[in-house]
Amino acid sequence: MTSYRLDVLEAFLIDLNRVSAEVILPLFRAENGLENKAGAGGFDPVTLADKNAEAAIRKLIATRFPDHGVIGEEFGEDRPDAEWVWVVDPVDGTRAFVAGLPVWTTLIGLRHRGKPVLGSIGQPILGEIYIGHGGGSRLVTRQGSRVLKVRKGLSLDRAIIATTDPEACFDAEERLAWRQIRAAARLARTGCDAYAYAQVAAGHVDLVIESGLKAWDIEAAIPVLAGAGGFVTDWRGGPIGPKGGQMAIAGDRDILEAALVSLAPAARNPN
Image: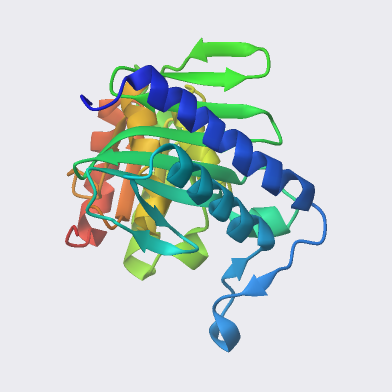
């Protein structure tokens, strides 16, 4: 990253989390303008928190860095081929949000020349921002900050693993792969969306398996996990493509490799 000082971009990323939190928090467990983007064919919720927070994030980016592009879940692409592009999911885990569960997060990542280089996973109810890049990651709270490090030295049979919703998010082959991994692991949790990614970076969770992700669902987490010493791959063990897809996040390489054995038969071609 040569065009901007890293500390300037990190400080701005924290500002983006602050302005989005100011919009989202008054709408949590309150009237939030819930809509269903899927119409009669299913349930894909969006709220005023999603829309208004992304609008606030885009406005601040346009003010501070008018040459930067933005890709967001709610309002699409603006100069996606720019040298610097922000990738935004204002409320990742909208289903948790509308259920009143404080495990949703705000995901904000930054691409430089197409590669994720900086990211944050914010949980404003808890006052947490997990922020990182290839040089290191930290948890920023109201009390200060601390270094993030993944947990190392465990095998899969001692691991804590997670996914969002294996029944809704996985097809039959993918569910079989998940069940094999779950049977081998010590403990499995579901329903935490990207907050589980943050807990891998913090050393509390060892493996997260997901599928059907969009870029805004995962790109913010890639630098956070890299800076904490973790790994983010597709189900073949390769890099995550620019459009998302299947994903495995792990703190320990041995756990990742063990999981990939089960994931490989259900792996899709990368983007």
